[in-house]
Amino acid sequence: MNEFTFAYPTKVYFGEGTAEKALKAELERAGQTVMLAYGGGSVKSNGIYDEIRGILEEAGKEIIDFSGIMPNPTYAKVQEGAALAKENGVDFILALGGGSVIDCCKVISAQAKLEQDIWTMEYADYKFPTDGLPVGAVVTASGTGAEMNSGAVITCEDKNWKGPILGTAPVFAVLDPSYTASVPKMQVLSGAFDTLSHAMETDLGNSDKDNVSDDVALAVMRNTVVNMRRLLTDINDMQARGNLMWDSAMAENGILKVGHLTDFQAHQIEHQLGAYTDCNHGQGLAVIHPVYYRHIVNDAREKFTRFAKEVFGKDTAEEGIEALAAFIKECGLPTRLSELRSKTEITPELLRSIADTSNIIKCGPRELTKDEIYDILTECM
Ligand code: NZQ
Ligand code: ZN
Image 1 (cartoon, protein in one colour):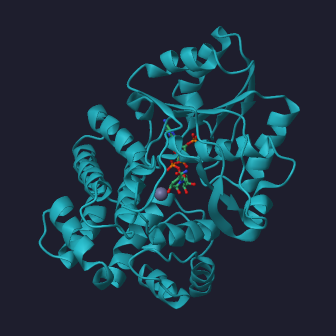
Image 2: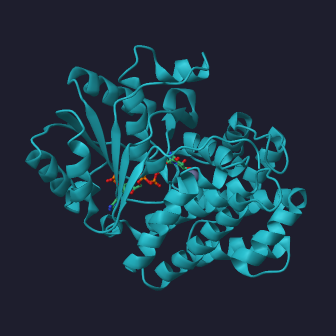
């Protein structure tokens, strides 16, 4: 095992009806003014907003509404939220949504305590926030695991850049599977594929042999596939949704990364694809993964063979990768870039820009070149 420090900042309340218990316990410690942050309106139509707002009102909190956080949250939205928090002397931020809302709030939290622009601080001065407004997360769409870490993924539209900004980890997270009941089928499966991707990308990073993090990652992958297949039979299988909700948290709460380097090259490519197209994160990954893995199969043959055996019951590395591709099809997830939501036409020139701006990972199976990333993207067309 590589050297590591491990701490767990987030208290998790898992299960149906846990929001009330969690908020009553946690908000006692929070200040008076709570920013209630959410996305484009799903929480209003499914009744979750009213339920949470009611609990806050009953606790006598002053509520500052912050709505309209979009999928692939933008840096401009972070700044809008931070300004609102400062203006109103917000004491606590309650994120009500999926990865996008939670990520946006994690950075609002840090920016609200800073005079300096946080992107400049992190990317020009290489300094990271040490303070932030406390954040709580009520998860309404699972998959990213954003509720249990301090990293956020934000899109800077003016820079054509989507990437990590370190913010504040939630002090608590509510994981109530029934809150995901209204998530559309394609989003449920895209989110779950993101979870599978996190475990695969972590596993492919360099690690010592026979370490427990690899074993846990394989267990998370297996369990994610099993429960995604249950949802293909019955999308309303709430037990499977709950299992996936915890898989999602497990894949990104740091447990799989203990003593381990990570790959995350597919994520780097997807993030830039997202910066240029605004595509759905899990769906972008579904397109990229098999193509990327065919490129690097010889650089991590042992890991791919184990993945093939333990996740898909296949014998060889190649068979495992093809089983993954077949599974993506079975789920009805996109397999080509042309099937993704995109705000712009996907042309060879666009793919060149995506390739040239993608981050290159040095601790994965092999360091790619920009040209190879371009080839991978072209093969995804
Ligand atoms: O905006 P609303 O109306 O709420 O609709 C959302 C959104 O359109 C909808 N939704 C959420 N809960 C719902 C619901 N619809 C019906 N019923 C509900 N209960 O779902 C849509 C997608 O939401 P979003 O939050 O964008 O999805 P997801 O959770 O997949 O988050 C994606 C974002 O997280 C980042 C991605 O890059 C992307 O920006 N990631 C964050 C990570 C992290 N912080 O650890 C790791 C990931 O690798 C990922 O990069
Ligand atoms: Zn992801």
